[in-house]
Image (tube, rainbow over all chains, first blue to last red; front, top):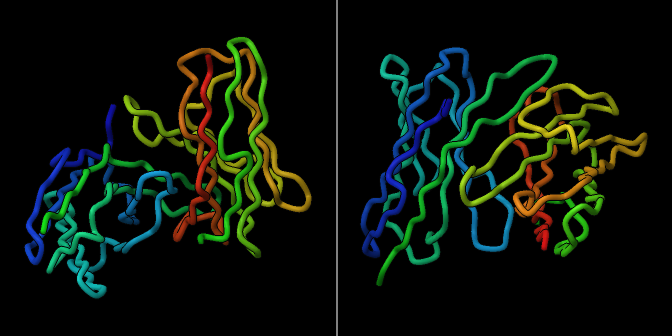
Length: 114
Length: 113
């Protein structure tokens, strides 16, 4: 059972445009939602994260929008640049005092064209 | 550079063999996680250790085992390897049990032939 569904699978955006990647989760116990960026041959790198007590978090050109009632969250990349071309993964976890694991979406391959 | 070091970067081995993947977490991080990334399964959580103790288990096969040593480095042992075990294996670390701000290493690409 896939607990975090991510779409689209791939995305092509022109330079300067807005890239939007969406994720939906099923487990209402999730309380931490990070986004990871992965370049070819590299490990995933934490980009930005949100907790469900806020509806939006912005860091530079990256914004997470969170809708708790709909169990959805999304990543917006403003003024997309060719250097943003990478695979993006949403994830979710349950913060616990005893253990934790990240459940990842299937990834979105973003290509930003000139 | 995330500060998480994985060795080796690449590994080619035959079916039926056993390999050991090594991970050194970031300085100060007590939690170590292992993930498998394959084309058809995406990023899958395998196991978590915290300060030497196993804390969470995911989709880890019985042929696979892991441990975390007193110096906090971790090893993932894969035995009786099958072609389907070919994948990228990532180690991640975080300072706490909660797994927030997990930092990933660059991975070990395992190819089973």
